[in-house]
Amino acid sequence: MTILLGVDALDAAEPLMSDIEMYRLGLEASTGGDDGDFDLVTAHKWFNLAAMQGNLEARAYRAELANEMTSEEIAEAQRLAREYLSTHRARPQA
Image (tube, rainbow, N blue to C red; front, side, top):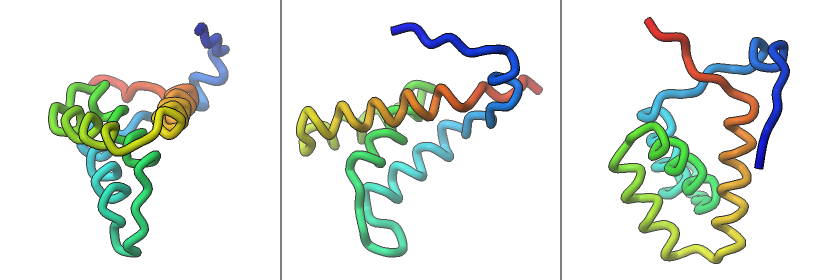
């Protein structure tokens, strides 16, 4: 699958969150956070994105969640991760 984006789209894209921020969002979604409603698809998405940035804890949690999810749920989480990546760009190096 190839995604073609114009320069204007990349300039307008929001920066990616850090792997730690994504990991924390995954934890919140997997435990229910403040409201107690957990969402395995969203949790998998955030753990997947954090793992892509090298977060080993997120990688382990993603694998654990995948054992509790259907293949359709995993596919949806992966679609959501791709969607996030298509609308965000890497942060500039300091």
